[in-house]
Image (cartoon, rainbow, N blue to C red; front, side):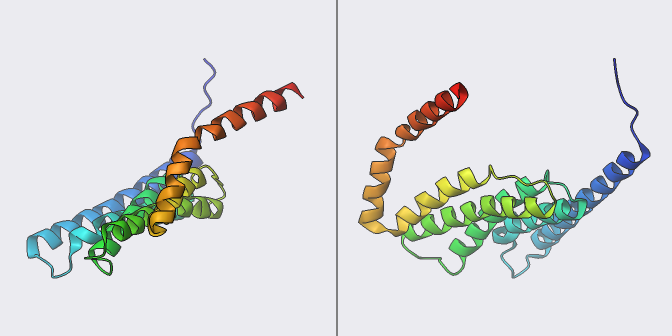
Length: 174
């Protein structure tokens, strides 16, 4: 067994990360509890996901680690969508609220990539689900044209897999 000893530096970083993450989660929990107990006029429930996402994002940025940024971006995107469809877009058509929700969620995935660069742990992969979800959101805004485009993509998207397979085979053989 070839184990390396844990250095003092990594222990202090782990303690710091736990302190930051734990502190932010305690603040989020206390704010939610106080809101529930005292019936704040603010619709706290609508802001919960966004607030929790911001806590995770702050944790990741303060700790300079991508781990908390991933759930933070997802929660912030979903939370932004919830705030928008219960606020400015409340009562909008179903396609509009669905599009706002999907575009907000896609934005959260893109945010992960942007913030990953700030902590010097660049992650491009969140752009894949972000682009797919964003594309679907945009097609909902496009009305009948968008719906037809979505049907075409739904029918032929498997060609992308075929093209990737061909690319991998030819690249491997070079």
